[in-house]
Structures are given as structure tokens and as C-alpha cells.
Amino acid sequence: MEWQMRAIRGATTVAENSVEAMREVVTELLDELENRNQFQPSDIISVTFSVTRDLDAIFPAAIARARPGWDNVAMLDVQQMHVEGSLQRCIRFLIHAYLPASASIHHIYLRNAASLRPDWSLPQPLQTSQQAVKSKV
Image (cartoon, rainbow, N blue to C red; front, side):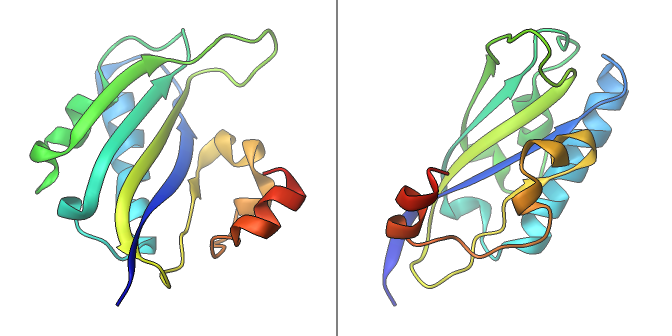
């Protein structure tokens, strides 16, 4: 079987800037990621979490590190660039992982973040690079 480095994207929103609320939504997001995509944390190369400037109660990576097998994953938290009128209280991730080349990738957009990528609101297989270039996605 051929393996490739693949990217998985996702996002969610949180009702308030609190440790409890952020823990709930990050756990929900990562649970959905693991349920829809067939991989192990040992397959993950790195995860970048970004949060909007209105979230600072806890690092999403700290929440992820508490998950079984995630403590050895390289993770980074950054602040998302602010654009006036953009989605508030949003947590995003970009994961790079080694996965079978034939594996379907399901990007996860939950809660109000589903509006960011309505085309990915249902599980979608990863497009081929040629299709991705044509659609500019």
C-alpha cells in the first residue's frame, strides 16, 4: 500500500471564552475527526491549531495532548489573523498525517464553522490535485 503525507482541515466555534466551553468543542471536533477518518495519532506528523483573537482561556493543543496517543504529536497554537466581520470564537486545525494514498479524507466543520466550508458540511473524499487547482480550493 502506498502512503502519502495528507492534510486534513477542520473548525468549530465556541459559545464563550472559558476552559470548559473550549474543552467541550475541541473534544467534539477531535472525536468527529477520529470517527470519520481512519488513522491513529501515531500517523500524525503535526497539528496547527488557530484561534480567533477573542479566545485565550486555554490552548487547544493542551486539550488535544490529553487524548490517548496524542501526547507525542507535534502541535502548535497560533492566533488567527483578524479580519473585520469574520467568524468569532472560532477554533481551526490543520493536520498533516501519513495516510494511505487511497484513503478518503473527511474535513470536519462543526457548529457555526460549517458556514466556512458548506461544500464540506458532509463527508467528502479528498479531491485530486488537478481538481483542487481547477476549483481553487
